Image (tube, rainbow, N blue to C red):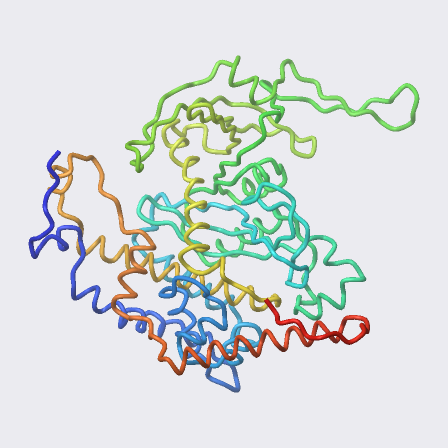
Length: 485
């Protein structure tokens, strides 16, 4: 195939990229921020300008997006930026609610937006940060010292973005001997232990209260196998798609739970009467199910196609029978089992499409971590985690809003499909928008004097750290000093 050349002056506009729009990204970011900066002011001080440079740093810097690093890149003292994120009493919740208000009325989310839940873990070297403990780290696939958040992502065919989240606090953080540590990192006194499924339900209620539109919820098996969460979603009239383990037991007819007197004990024995039951894996292999091969969406390797099957089954929730859909997806050797309360009239194609959107929260997580600075975040306080999450959501919504606006006003030339002999064109990524923003708002370059000051401060910090460690060590006989390597 002879690909079209790119030496014509209108090549970029064919892809929806207009020079004036790119050159105006800095002004766009400033105007965008002005809509929300009122939430970052306190009764006694207006430090909202710190917020602009923090947001700008998350979007423009490529690495070291710590509070100190962002402060240095924007000529704000490390101490002031640290205080703004870790200690300033502005509340993140009204800021996030304001973003939800913008999303609520945006045309892109008025039909077929999916709300996806997942957790994401960040490894920690110590146990001093809020919520840190030895817990499962999905990225590493094992138990490690980690800090875990539960996040909500809103997904459409055009865009996906984090819209809310909560820090998970392991149960031992509420033990009496952790009271001092809770106080030190600022855990609110009213905060109580909540399981991850309970945090998801809290997030659902908050997102519903803010009237964010979505047609259904999708979640992995940590949440899908939680029958109470599924029941709560059903009771709220929310359609869900919850992954479940292969050994999840289902019934083909309505089961009856009975309690009968045991032979050797006074305790009643629970029995379940049903004509036939099976695991979801057995049902897929042997059961009579409606089956279809569904084309889901364009992907980097062509069109994404998967095999789906479904049937109506019964499950037990607190000994109460409930009828649900069992939906099964097979892609090559990978099989996923899903329980859903979709209407009995829902088509298999609709259910397949909605279930398959869970993939996009992995994309949202990756964008937040690698493109918006979540991986670089370093702080110990609970308030800092909430503030940083609010700025990550703020950055994510700026990118999403920009992409959606340009897509609507400057759609790519349809002739590109013919030129490249393809059936779909890629959309702007978060990394693409960040690259354009860096061109419009170049990061300042350090002068020789500034570089020397930075290195000197680094040496001073290392010296102070070493002195602090020596003070905590037991007395040792004096020795000739050895240069630090």
